[in-house]
Amino acid sequence: MDKYECFNTIKDILESKGCHIDNKKEINYGIQFQLTYQQQKGIYRIYQSKKGIRLDSSQIKDGDFRLFIDNIINEVLFQASKDQTKDLNDNNNTISQDPLPIIGIDESGKGDYFGPLVIAGVYVDEKTSIILKQAGVTDSKKINDKKISDLALIIKNTCPYDIVIISNEKYNQLYESIRNLNKLLAWGHARVIENLLERVDCKYALSDQFGKPELIQEALMSKGRKIQLMQRTKAEENIAVAAASILARNTFVEKISELECQYQLELPKGASTNVITTAKKFVQLYGLDAIRKVAKVHFRITNHISS
Image (tube, rainbow, N blue to C red; front, side, top):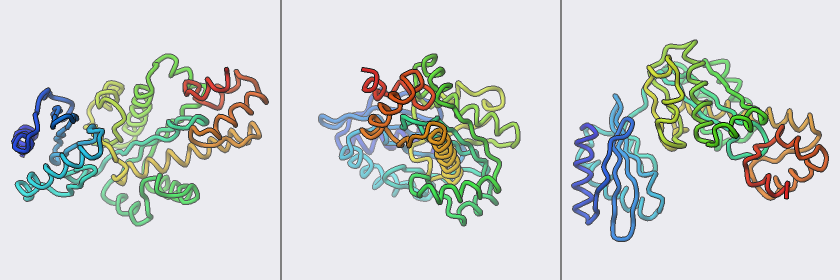
């Protein structure tokens, strides 16, 4: 089943249940369309790669509506095509195994006021995939910083990797120039891919989807444009992306620690009220201009400390 056959099947399924399908259009590696049921609307995507079809309902923002649509499609489509599909689940609907070797990319620090933005990439093949799984590599959000540090060492000793660190001063300069966080992230992801492709030969790369799929593609240069770039939500379920998430998180924690030593002040992670309190204290100690050296100043938190 290709993406066109899949679309027609899904369209028939949903329309038989009273849904209206329109605004169908081609997107990178797939098809996107809008579906409407009674007063609810959402965007649905069908992606196709050499390994198969992937369904994406993540753009349906209402959780109950998304579950309603997923249940309809999963119940009927899976039964109709179970000989061709596997690994179907409610949250991600990944129907095919990701190819190997693959470069996984992930970032850390984008939601943290203090500290840099870190993007990491890890090249994983059949052999190293087994080693990483046996070591306990998983999404960094599921493990504590101590274990992350231990796993980061294993990953670095096992796989080719690359880490791009965008310091706060550089981050603020780039953001003021680009004025778009997703474009800045895409630039960082593209640099990691290009750097790794200088050292390894790989046909596939996978990252979490954080904006328009074409953003990273447009930021890639000659080597990167030859690779098949895949993007999806919950990409950390892939072992290469999970490894990249660990390297990115570990590096972010290390850089935060370095800033704390330099300024003799604990810098909390995230963007909570505790962060605002610390930011005000930092400004009292070092002045408003110095905040650019430790924080992402486009966050609303800066308004609280400069007013």
